[in-house]
Image 1: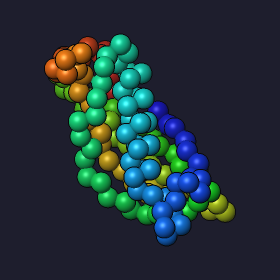
Image 2: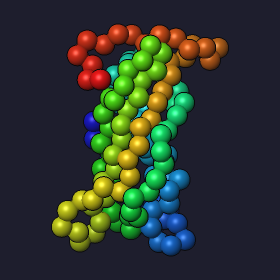
Image 3: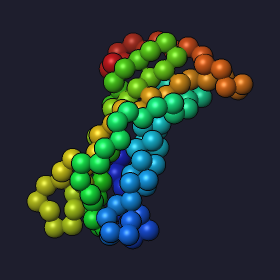
Length: 124
């Protein structure tokens, strides 16, 4: 699943590039959207984000592409890999700026873990 975001002035840090916290918010949100579409009717919460290492900055006006795909399916958890690409204004091609894996648990109303439904053809 791919999602896109435009880096606007309100997303910039004091150096004039994308604020890392904003990028992490989008990563978590877009990974959750993919998981929620794959596991409809399940209450999913973020429990982990693997290594957080920013490879490159993204200037204002960049179009970001978030590529999200299933990576691992457990009994009560599912992990998605996320790679972020930036297409800076005037650039000839997009470049990878960030990648990580985000893990979600399925929980009940009391916050207890529940098994995820088994998915046939689920790409993990």
